[in-house]
Image 1 (cartoon, helix red, strand yellow):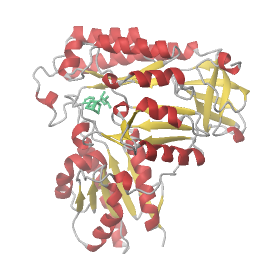
Image 2: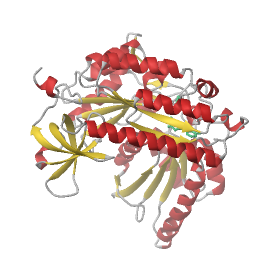
Image 3: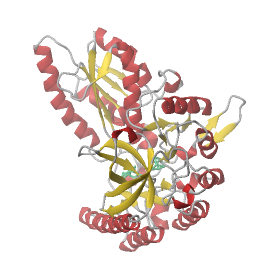
Image 4: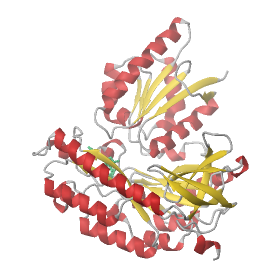
Length: 462
Ligand code: 5AD
Ligand code: SF4
């Protein structure tokens, strides 16, 4: 009999990918995805541990779900309740202890064992806990990924991180770096394209540390992999995230120069502009090296734009350190960023460092930094007015007859266009800009597989 499954996803795009794969693996057991927890037969919280109080938020959500589970039980029905993802990995035992009504707790590396866990949960009382870092790779056991809900799809190619930035929990929750073999990745990309994906975003905690092993024992880095994916019919856009500056190699820079499908937009977290703070963060790059890297990327791809992650108020950060970060933001001209107040994560080295920065200083610095970034974003959006830009129309707009899409720089664009253009790349002339979106008019249809620069005039004649 058909059963319903609700998965609530927190955090990064890798969790979004994992959620889809959990749905794939549970489908043969009769579970179909639903959009609310209310009457679901199984509810999974796919959690994120990067922020402060992540575990507490999970416990309060579990409290709410327990009421739903009890209400179902009173009607003689069951609800399987599960916690997955990085909070499960980091705090599995605590969940079992504090929320014994949870049926299953499992980490990001073991969800391929979900069918067994569901069986076990039905047979036993108490919680099934599986937070191993197994020797086998889950990718060898998952069904083929085909879920494509929009014209843009995620594809996990790499997982884990060996960098141990002193503020970060990822190396502890996601484990050591692992790359999927190119053969597997390319086959998955092909299936996604056959199922309607026009844009593929390659995912990894440290995606450019990718080193996939070939059948003959050789290896491919990310640059080589991107070249291969670009040969697949129907793939008109390639992106990758998240990268680590010290791992950007010549091959990857060359891919930005040579592969037209590789978007001229790169999310390259820098965290700080102060060498002293970068060293304390164990980032393995200086602000100067980051600037040089950006210069080399710009030389390879002059229209490239950058986005980044920043942490303000890392232990020991002075006003002078913070000003160095502000200068770096101006010099590089980031057009977008995610920025955070430093928050101590238990068990990470930075949490025990002296000179923790007061909360109000962090709040003040964050507001300044976000103010500057917003100005730069608005300025960049304004420079787009009057330009012709390639836009992947990927969803219906709020009003009928309207579609919404993304430029190469991830800006949202609203346009009046017929529905049959959904899922295609089109050239739009941009006529207005707001902080978070643009508006354009349709110029040409179906630009798929041509070079999509920010300004497309030169490519349309190429
Ligand atoms: N405090 C604040 N921000 C953090 N990030 C990771 N750990 C912390 C922390 N302890 C931010 C970093 C990273 C992004 C995903 O989250 O900027 O790049
Ligand atoms: Fe965390 Fe990224 Fe540093 Fe790895 S490289 S420890 S994922 S911030």
